[in-house]
Amino acid sequence: MANTIGYARNRLFAVLGFGLLTGCSGMQPTPMMPTYPAQIGGPSGVSMESDSLCRQQAYQAAEKVKQDNVNKEVAFTAIGTIAGAVIGNQIQSPGRYGPPRGPRGPGGPGGPGRPRTNDMAGAGALAGAATGAALSQGTLQNTQQVYDIYYNNCIERYRNYR
Image 1 (cartoon, rainbow, N blue to C red):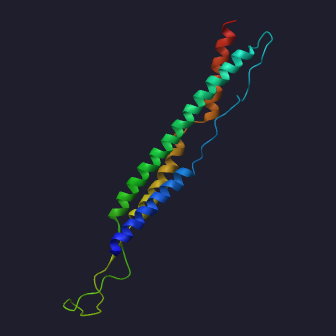
Image 2 (image 1 turned 45 degrees about the vertical axis):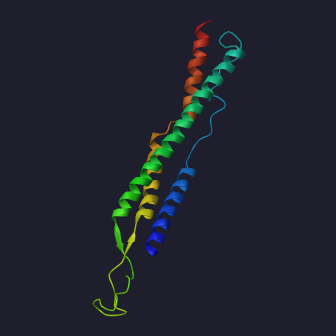
Image 3 (image 1 turned 90 degrees about the vertical axis):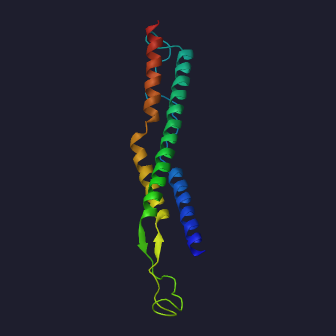
């Protein structure tokens, strides 16, 4: 019974750790304005309609990248959690007290008993989730950079059609 409670407790810590680490992601808001907006009107500028259309396309591209970033973070963290739980489950750390031996066992009543071990799956899952969340940061795209690239490419297309 006590082993079942410890098992459930470790799994609860793993789930809470996973939720905490995915909730602490460094996600950026979707950009709403280009870093260097195009000139509106004039000989080298674009129309307001073209600018608005380019901003909308750039926003949609940046929003898609933002969602991809979230998916990557969740996937990396989940894989880290599972791997950490599996590895932690294989690690046995010694506990303080084992179950007492019965009257017929060596040492008689009240003897020292067998050494007990603690399941480390919960700690492994938490460490794996942290590692997965940290590793995911290197794979994320900068949403402002994506927005600017899409916006600038769109504006150049409209300038070239004049």
